[in-house]
Image (spheres, rainbow, N blue to C red):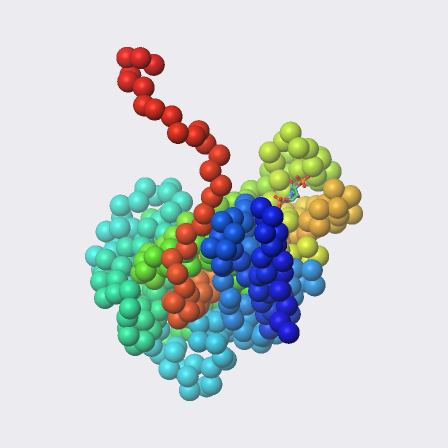
Length: 428
Ligand code: ACO
């Protein structure tokens, strides 16, 4: 017999179905709760609320497990490429040699962006934050591809929109960077692989050919793979909820980019480096900053620490910490901020405050140090996160459409004034 949960309210008892996922996660299905009882559930921050059933990413926060479509993140980060992982997330299985080559070819045909879009880049003040620009430019793609506005596209048209977005995103990201420097943009080169092409557009020069070191390209693949999906986090839930109104893919992803920008989410990678720099400039006293993070009267939080779901360790942080050592070693970089990061991590892991609250370094704690070593300025870090997260957002948007999920529309418990009559201005 299938499991049920009982709830008793206003003297009446109701049986609710219990759903079990493929990894034995249990959820009480409350979709009929209001109909039968008149009550709703209240769960600020959705700490206990499953918004959907999803077959894309599995994570177990207690055990530190993360799998894309069943494949452990450690194996994918070690053996796969970013485009292969993108295919896996979006279409459900690892591609064959033939399907991967077809996927790569199709994407390479759409890497250019409409020449008129260059005017957008020119319109931004040179110091405007890349995340604001990215969100705006991705949303603007819908203006150039109006066929993407069809809420019920054919499979072929939907795939075309997906390819265009995957193809144009690296061009947009690198052009944002080039414009911030006042440098001429570098056009995509279709003979280079996805990540190499991105690095070439970002660090290449119009005046000379630049060799991008293999180890740099490989580190970038790893970072993008580690960021590619993370089930129903803040930005992904945003993408799904915006898409549930039948908003087009570009608009939905643009909203996800805005959600990712916040320092409690993807913006933490920028905030971590800024914090480490502050600690260094302040004399490098980790204990003083740990004390600040623990002080409830101080709004400061240890950036790159803590996670809504991981309560033991973040498997991505483990891989990134190792990659960070490797990259710095290979590039011969001695970054004093890495030492501070290691000291801070060691001190926090021993500190009762962090132990009691199960606060561990998350994916953002070390990623900024690698990005910096690769030559990216701090305000580009969150944009790189968005580049990595793109296939995950697309996969989640596609799944939401395929499942024909209803429009996302949470309820509330109203706590404002009860009915009162309007008082004319001269009588108030
Ligand atoms: N520094 C100090 N204290 C912290 C930290 C931190 N980084 N994170 C959580 N806490 C404390 C809280 O103050 C709270 O303490 P209390 O129980 O005494 O009130 C307790 O730990 C629980 O924290 P919540 O904020 O309730 O946990 P939540 O799951 O809502 O937040 C979050 C998770 C937002 C990631 C939080 O840990 C945080 O702000 N971390 C710093 C920002 C960061 O690194 N974000 C990146 C997350 S990974 C990602 O999005 C890619």
